[in-house]
Length: 135
Ligand code: IDP
Ligand code: MG
Image (tube, rainbow, N blue to C red; front, side, top):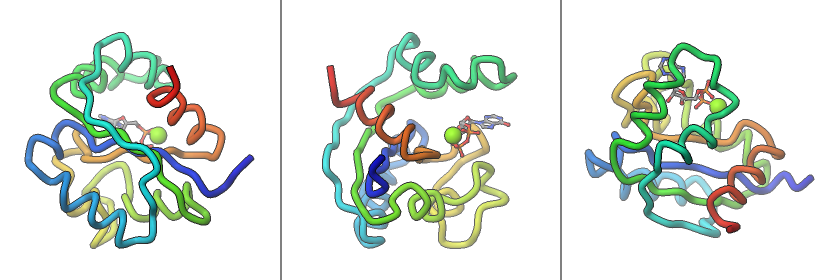
């Protein structure tokens, strides 16, 4: 399994607030290369499929609704140690717990509307990137 790839989504809250440019700059300045990128809107079916691992969680329905609430930017990224380094760059799921300078600390609205997604493993980076970029 490759360790130099990850996958990210600029979520609807951040896109709506026009943070996409600043977030992409921070990602590139941190050494990540964008290898694929597109602006899309999710359907309920796609959101539920993407987040199916969380389907038993109490926040699942709201999460899927929120992810369909506006355009998102999906990107595949390349860098050594991509998954771990990117999770560090975005910070904790809850922006109130995220470290200073992380993308979620800077741009998130709430624990749900937390500005950005980052894959949590090399396996999921491939699955998630293929989900959006292989038809
Ligand atoms: P992650 O995005 O940091 O990997 P996960 O636990 O995988 O966090 O959760 C996926 C997404 O679900 C989060 O990014 C956030 O948008 C939402 N979420 C996670 N936990 C909560 C919660 O306790 N309340 C509401 N939404 C949540
Ligand atoms: Mg996750």
